[in-house]
Length: 268
Image 1 (cartoon, rainbow, N blue to C red):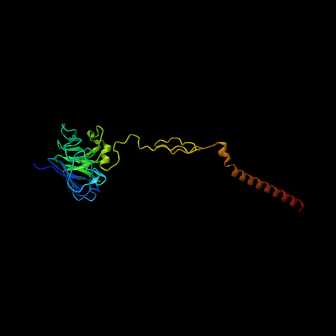
Image 2 (image 1 turned 120 degrees about the vertical axis):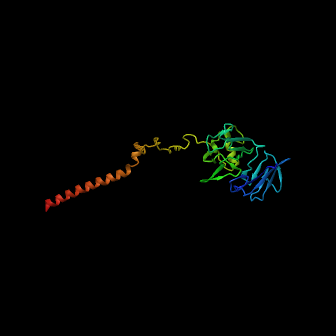
Image 3 (image 1 turned 30 degrees about the vertical axis):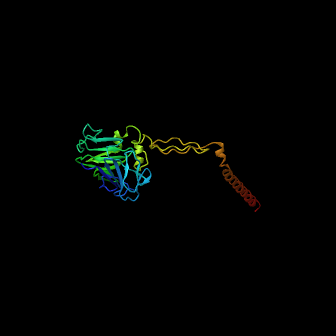
């Protein structure tokens, strides 16, 4: 019986594919021995760290050991032995998550939840395989791959959003969606958007300005309120008064001109 061993890296040909730019093509390996698990760095660029220290040679670890690939990515735990939780999915009712589709095998795959909150999806020799969306395309997973709650899988022709696999989100602790996203470097808590959460908040009225009435979708734009207070009217009175004075002086000048013209005609 062969000794279980996994190669981790950003190359899809690795046993555990980690689609992250900070991870080397073949970053590290994990081997199960009779004494436990042994971790090796495979000459990676950003290093492999155990409990904060970069390893130089074979290093014994436990499933609960803190292991980082570089400074951002936690080691995705690939073995059922030592896993925090395992969620199996497929067409059979014996799975933890049942997918009723002819494209899906009876026992299609499983997701292994590590103690650090990582999620690894593994293909259980399914007929149509498992694809992982990267941009606008799906890439076939050779054996296993690191996933996050925001990923989408392809089982044959059936798309499956990871966030819809409800057994993964039951309970608390490191296996929660938030911890898994942070452990995978996402740093953002996933989850469904609350109804109405994308509505814009109305800004408070400026000091001394009347608040705008609420506007519903489809309504015509609401005109700003007209301030007819004496203070508002008096703010424009100097200009209006000047115009009125000029108009009044113009009228007097015209009348005086007519009077003088009449006197001139009388003595002519």
